[in-house]
Length: 256
Ligand SMILES: Nc1ncnc2c1ncn2[C@@H]1O[C@H](COP(=O)(O)OP(=O)(O)OP(=O)(O)O)[C@@H](O)[C@H]1O
Image (tube, rainbow, N blue to C red; front, side, top):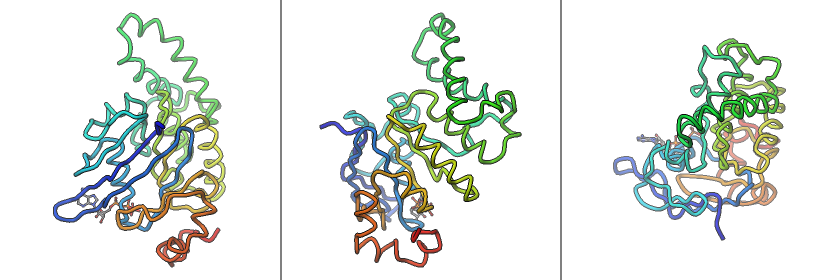
């Protein structure tokens, strides 16, 4: 069976310290997986290893059965994995529509010769319009990205992340810094725009985790302590001991 994403005995050391210590993870196409764990557990490092920002010390990463560890981020992206870099993907002085169109065109740009590229511009406009509706920013079509609210910028960021048609999407703390209402709205939006895609998200807000994820991977000290459905993870004694029942997790809302 081919997984959308598969990590095999992945390891990463910084100097003499091993931060990722033999991670195995297999994600089916169309699944939404939340990666949770205490601060410093290695969640961001794991994302960096998957997206090509870091090369593993050893082990393998497969995207749709194709080995991708050691590839550059743009190469991994071309193979169908897109990662949101929070608001840094946004061009502040371009409008919402133009930002989305850039996301679509970027993908077309490498796929086609210049003449074909020009002939596909109409398609790109249409796709950008669709995305704009999907992320709920149609009313802000011509507003410059820098003039959007923070939550709107995050929605735009997600739109840009999926604009190229990536099948596997990585979102790093998508609801960080949002109010409760914004978070609820945004969780629904992520659910909607990732239908038919595979999602990996690092998330501290347990309301979002349990509302969004089909499976949860609990990472503690660079290892996957549990990888299961939300119900099973919630009932896992080792997880409760190591994370969910901890004062840190309580402070982050794990009990909700
Ligand atoms: N480039 C690096 N060089 C050295 N150490 C690093 C580097 N990147 C991360 N680390 C260390 O690796 C450990 C894991 O960091 P990482 O950011 O992956 O954790 P995290 O689970 O994402 O934490 P948080 O929830 O706080 O974002 C930390 O101890 C961190 O200091």
